[in-house]
Image 1 (spheres, rainbow, N blue to C red):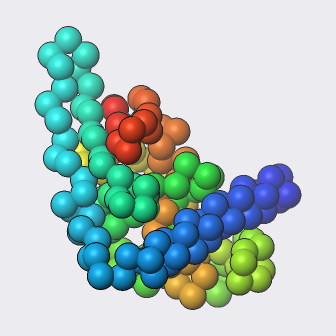
Image 2 (image 1 turned 180 degrees about the vertical axis):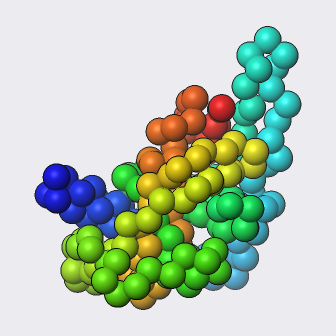
Length: 176
């Protein structure tokens, strides 16, 4: 079981580091263009068709092809980058602290290999995580030192629990 958890965390971190590097490369190439805020990129939830009864959220990709979303953890605002390669939702330590999550050094029981070397991660559970009206409860996540993660990641521990999600033509559609 420890090996599975370690592999899952490793996969999440590798998937988290590569987009961060690509974002930096893109920013160097387009330094004069300022990216829009996460709130501007994420469209408001659309009214679901009456016959389906589901809530649908559509998010437009950034110029770099990433999906930035504004979410809330237990009612507190947090920005995320959608990462389908991340097994778990990953929070930077600073943002976790703003949410009232303060792992102690002994809580960093997971280990993961990243481009910055092997790091310790702290497994946590989020009571609720909401993205534009789509809410999932009891979400597995990890807290990662700020130096090892540049942005919070919305991983599969959230995405796999919505009714469906689909990425096509520069748009992410989630339905619950």
